[in-house]
Length: 208
Image 1 (cartoon, helix red, strand yellow):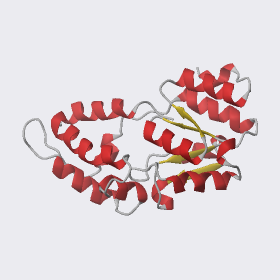
Image 2 (cartoon, rainbow, N blue to C red):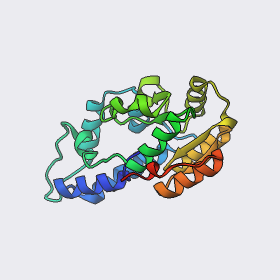
Image 3 (tube, rainbow, N blue to C red):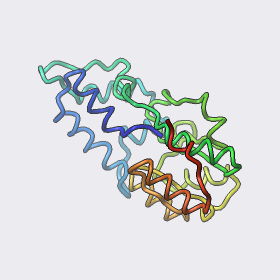
Image 4 (cartoon, helix red, strand yellow):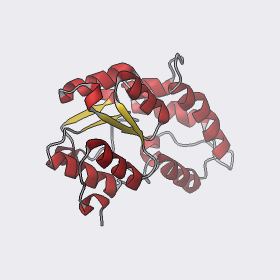
């Protein structure tokens, strides 16, 4: 539903002069295992499940980062700064507006990094169901969160399409019974959704 996270992160690293190697090292240690089967719990798991406050996560992350000058990185509002360049994808918003208006059951299933930044004022016109990981104590790619979301929709997994830009999440959803769709490009995703649903989507989906 947004521009690629990597774009926001790259802009943040450059704007604040954060050493990229220090960021890459900690992300490899925390994020990659967070999506691996049988991985030990780590700060990413805890943050996304709401088991630690986002301030606690920010302090832990800031301790692992360093500026290119060798100085420390400020912990306060670190996540807000990190994702400050995030922008809504108008094409995907258009897709869900049209599906929702047509009576197609829709939902969002999001792993939360702090719980803030969601355009909740838009949710009623986009989704029937909203599942935020930190609010339900579960996270993707755990099978239970997919089952929770589909139960709220009143559907079976086989009746649903799951869209995500992280392959591990798509694979996990497929194992539960969803039709998985790995998002790489808005136009391709919209075209594939139309094919899977057997519907014709209007030009409004593409955005202006």
